[in-house]
Image 1 (cartoon, rainbow, N blue to C red):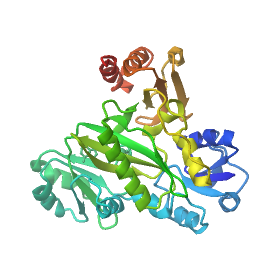
Image 2 (image 1 turned 90 degrees about the vertical axis):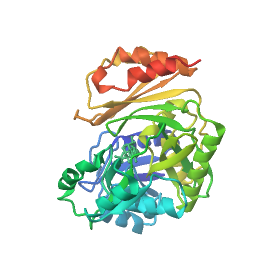
Image 3 (image 1 turned 180 degrees about the vertical axis):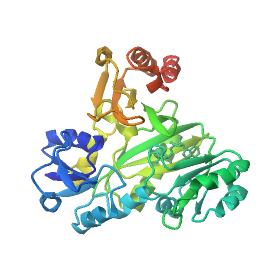
Length: 380
Ligand code: ATP
Ligand code: MG
C-alpha cells in the first residue's frame, strides 16, 4: 500500500513511522515546491507529483492549509481521504461555523465580518470581550487579535485595515470564560466504524498548545459521552474517513466546539506511547481500509511540546516512561521542535515525573510544566 501525504512536517513523519510495520509506504508532498519527498529525511524522491499521485493507493493530508490547486488535483484522482469538503471545513473558519450550525453543535457565539464597520455591531451583539480570527491560514494563535475593551476598537480597526475581508472574512467570537480546554480525537473507517480516544486536556500559552494530559482528569461519563456524541455527528455529517480532532472548551458541564482539525493532531501525540493504537496508525488504517485499532488509554499520559528551544539535556530520557520525539527542524522562535511523552501508573506519579522533567529543560520555554506537575502530584 502507498499513501501520499500533503505536507512534509512532523505529522507526515509520524505517519511514516506508524506505516512501516504495516507495510504501508508513506511519501510526503512539500506543498511549497510541489515535490515529493521522504517524510523523515525530507530529501526529494525520484518521482514527480503526478507520478506519485498515480502510484498512490490513497492521498491524505497532514494539515488543512494545502493550496487549493493541489487539493483540487488530489480530489480529481478520487483517492483523497478525508474528502476535499472535510479538509476545506478545517481550513476555513466560515465553513467550519456553517457546519457546526447546520449540525446544531454548540460553539462560541460569533459573527462573520466582511467589513470593518460590522465590528461595532459585533460589540453590540457579543459584548466587548472578543477574539477576532482570520477565517483562513491561521494556526498556533497566528491570525488572531483580541479586544478587551470597546475603547480599543479604533486601534483594532487600524490593525485590521490592510486585510481584504471580502476575500477572507473574519470570524469574531465572544471570548469564553471556559474552565479548561479539551480535545477529542477519533477515527472513522470507510465503512463507518468509529472509535474515539478518551478526552484530552490541553494547556495553551499565548495561543499555542504546550501540554496535553490524557485521559483528561476528572471527566464524568456524561462529559465523555457528550464529546462522543459531538464527534459522531460531525464524522457522520461529513461522511468522514480518517482521524478527526475536535477542540473544545469545557464550560461547567457543557462542551463548546472551538475548532476542527481534519487530520492527526498535536493533542493526540500521547497516543503513540499511551494507547493501544496510535492516532497515526489509526489514520492510516482508516484511509487504506484496514480494521481500526483499539483507542483505549493504557495509562495516564502527558505530552509536552518543545517549542522554540533546542538546548536541553537528552538525559531527560533517564526518567522512566519518558520518550522524546525530535522533528529534526532548525530552531525558530515559537516553532514546534519536538515533543516529550510521559506515562505513569497514576496521575500523581505522572506529576512527579513531570517535576523531574523540570530539572532537564529551560523554564522559560516550558511555562506550563511546573504548575501542571504540581497540580497532578497532589492527586490521590
Ligand atoms: P491551533 O494551533 O489549534 O490551530 P489556532 O490558531 O487555529 O490554533 P484557535 O484554536 O481557534 O486557533 O485558538 C487558539 C487558542 O486561543 C485556543 O486554544 C484558546 O486557548 C484561545 N481561544 C480561541 N478562541 C477563544 C474564545 N472564543 N474564547 C477564549 N479563548 C479562545
Ligand atoms: Mg486550536
